[in-house]
Image 1 (cartoon, one colour):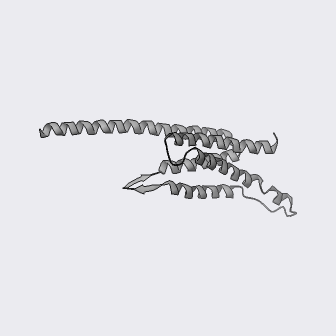
Image 2: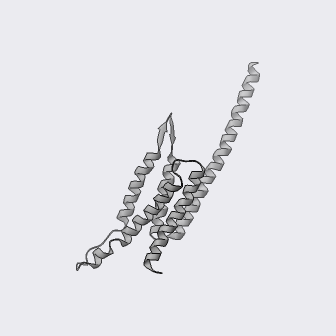
Length: 165
């Protein structure tokens, strides 16, 4: 396959996978939704591609064969940058922390984008599946817990009213 088409495929797959996670977050009406996750995954893939292929002319244009590039450096900086974005989504309000799942979602979406940028489509796809599974399973159990908790409180209130009468 032509290298340009392969690189386009990498950012396309990253955008699709990030978009899938973003759709779930959008459906749940979270702050970081489709556009955020789409852009984070696409941008991460692009950073990985630039890191791996963007400096090849530096190596071929020199007589000194001792030059080596560390393609992991840009990936590491993506992780740092995403940490700042994630920290911005976390809110401590009224003794409750909100936004941790959103921050973690943006963080893992960046990792999925980096994987796509590195051509690791299968691991990126499986990771996306697990992210969506985890988010949905979390919501399922949270709803069950909330219903159980509400029933428990309702029974205790009713029992308390009967004993006070």
